[in-house]
Every structure is written in structure tokens, then in C-alpha cells.
Image (tube, rainbow, N blue to C red; front, side, top):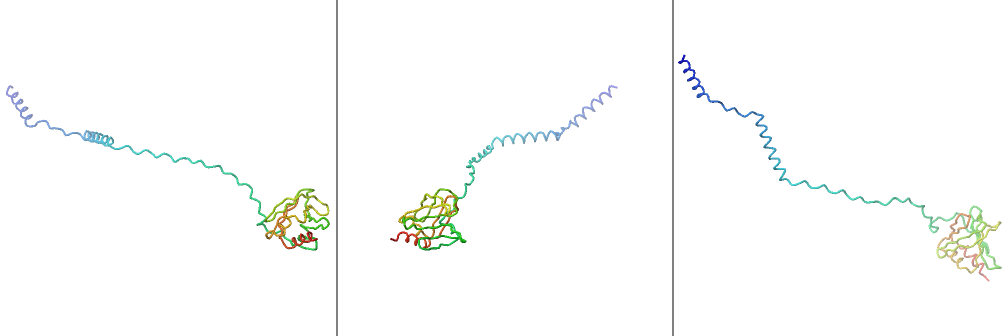
Length: 201
């Protein structure tokens, strides 16, 4: 019995000496955790050394625009560029008439006894008002009164320079009367002839 105990003891001592405990390699999950920790440390170092990103540019300034103003009415047509009133001048001693389709639209009548020229705008509906004459050199409103058989009538002395301005206006003159459509009349020789008739002694 004592011999068996010694044999067992010597066996165990030799087995343990010949087979030392093996070193177990590290498990894979431990290796992965270590690598991740190292990457995290390196990443934190690199982030600390990078400059901060540039600031975003400020938004463009808002430019206030003026409110849209509705356009006003179109300007009135200039009589110097408007078309002529349809018709023609007719003359007889002491009288010039502008007619269209047989109707008299405007006339200049010499009153030799008073040396005055009557300017008549037939068809005007106003009881009183004005006849405004516009030439290339003079423009003037003339007080006028309504005559039932004639129309709206104004009178000028035969020597008034407005009559010369009408006779020698550049191609045309205009006539506007209260209650009637405006006229753009050609400055034909008939106008000058009536003025000369009324100035002749």
C-alpha cells in the first residue's frame, strides 16, 4: 500500500512537470473591443486637431421694392399730331366756311360795319362758354354766347393778331368749343382771305 502511494505521487509530479498549463489565447471579442477602443482614442485625437468648419454665410439682405402704382389715364392727343377733321374750306367775299358732308362745322364771318370777325361753331349745345383757338404761335380762349340759328359765337376785332396766327399757322389750327367735338382744321388760304376782306378800307 505504501508503494502504491509513492507511485501515484511520482506520476502526478512527472505529469505536471511534462505538461505545464497552456496559455489560452485571448478570445476574439476581447480583441475586437480593444481595437474599437484604440480607434476611438485615435479618432478623438484627430477630431481635436481639425479646425472648426467655416460659419454659414449670412442671408442676403432683403431689398424693399416700391409698391406698384397703377398707371394713370393716357395723355390727351396733341392736336398738332392728330389727323385733320374731314371736310374742306369754302370761301365767298367776307365768309369762309369749313364744311363736311354738306354740314357747316366752323365759319369766320366778316362784319364790315363793325370791322369784326365772328367765329361760329355750329352744333355746340352750351348756352354760353368759350371757343378756344390753338395755333402754332398763339392759343387763346374766347368768351362765346349761343345763338339759336348759328351756334356758339365769339367775336374778334379784325386787327387781332390771333386771326393772323390762324391764317399763318403751320398747316393747321384747332377749335374747341363748349358742348362740341374738337376740330383740327387745315390753315388754307380761305382763312387769310376773310381776314383781308375785313381789314380792307
